[in-house]
Image (cartoon, rainbow over all chains, first blue to last red; front, side, top):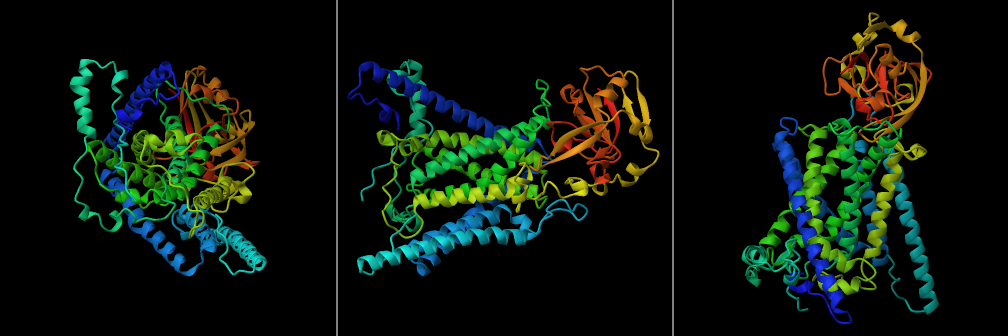
Length: 178
Length: 433
C-alpha cells in the first residue's frame, strides 16, 4: 500500500466520497507516522533508561538476557516444536494428531509459565510462604485433567468414525475436525 | 504458483499526492527521502533461495496471516494491559510531583497488579503461538526489499527480545528466582518501554495486513497487502486454524484459572500453580520479607522499643502506651507488587489520630521509617489521601492477635490501595515532611 495503492476506488461512489476517503487516508498516513515516531521515541527512552539506570540495570547482563530470549526461542523452542510435530505426523493418524497437538500446546504452556515452581527454583529458606505448594503434584493434576479431556475427544472421534464406517459400509479415514 | 511481487508494507508510506497539499517542500524533500526509504533493492539471485528460504518451505496451514493477525490483536491487547497496569504500579511507587494517588477504591491496586501478573502469565501461550504462525517470515524472500523494510525487520528484534524478556523475568520474579544480575523492577520497567515502543512500530507496519485479514468486510480490503489468508484446506493433517485458536485459548484459560486465585477473591481454591496462597503464612497471611531477611529480629523485640511521632508537637510512645492508644479495626488486603493479595483484619491506632496528636496539618505528607538498617523499602512516604484515610492504621494486631514479627511487630503501616512494599513494617518513626 504505497501511495498508489490507496488511491480511492471511485466505482459507485461520488466525487465527495472519494475526496473524503483521500483525506482520510492522508490523516491515517500522518497518524501512522506519528505512532511510528512515538514508538521509536519509546524505544530510545527505554534504552536511555537502561544505560542511565546503572548499576541497577546492569546493561551487559540485561543485553545477554534480551538476546538469550530470542536464541532460546529460535534454537530451543522452535526445533523442539518441529521435532514433536514431525514425530506426531509419523505416529498418529490425522484426526487424533490435532487433539494431541492441542494437548501438548496446553501442557507445554502451563509447564513453562510455572517452570520455577515445579522445578523447585526460587524462594528462600527463611520464608515458607513463598512457593508453598506441592507444585510437581499440582502440575500433574492440571496436566492430567488436560489429557483426560484430550482422551475424551479422541474416544469421541474414534466412535464417530467407526459409526460412519459402519453406516457407509466403506472403510475410510475418520473425518477431521479441529 | 506465480507469486505477485509484494507491495511494500513498510510503516513509512507517502501520503497520496492530492491530499498532501502538494507543496514544493513535499516535492523537494519528502518525496526523495520516501523514495530512498521505499525504493526497491535489486532482487538477490534466485539460486540463493534454498532450504528454509524456499517458497514452499513451511506448508503448515497455521502459518497464515489471518491467524497471525487475530493472535496479534489478542497479544497486543494483553501487552497493552500489562504496560498500563505496570506503569500505574511504577507511578504509585515513584509518584511524579504532579500526581497524587488516591486511597480509594480500596482494592484498586489489588485488581490492577493482579491483572498485570495474570495477563502476563496468559501471554505465554499467546506469544508462543504468535511466533509459530509468523515463523516463516524469518526466512522471508527477498530478505530485505528496501531501507524501510530493513528498518521494520530490524525493529522485530527488540519486539521479540523484549516480549520474551518481560515474560521470562516476570515469571522468575514472582517465584523469587533470581538468576539474573540486574535489579528486576528497574530493568523490567525500562525494557517495557522498549517493548511497547517496538510494538507500536510493529502495529503501524502490520495494520494493513490486519485490516485485510480481520473483520466482516475484510474482502473489500484485500488490496491493502499481498499477505492475504489463503482458504484453509477442508481436511488436513493435524491442528486446524480454529483448533489452534481453541488450544491457545484453553492454555491461557488454564493458566489464568490456576494462578488468579492468588489475588482474586473466591478463586483461591483453584490456586494450584500460583507462587502464593492468600492463606499460607504466619497468621494465615503470606510474607514477602521476613524479619530474619530484614535483620530486625533483635531490635524489633527490644523491650526498649519507642514509637516516635515527629511534627509540631512531637511525642514518643512506649509499646504499652501504643497499646492503650485508641484502637480501630480495618479489613484491608495486603496487595503485593508480585501480584498476590490477601485479606486480613488489622487492629491499631489510626495514623491520622497519631498525626493529629502531634499537630501535623491535614495537608502534610509524612514519612514512615522502619527499624531496618537499610534497603530500598526501609521508609515510605504517605501522602495526605492515605495518611488521612480512616482505614489507614499503624497496626499492632492482625487477625485477632499481636502482629507476628514477620508481619512487622511491633507496628506496621497498613493503608488502602497501596502496594505491599510501601506498607512499611517494624515502624519506629513517623516524620512530618
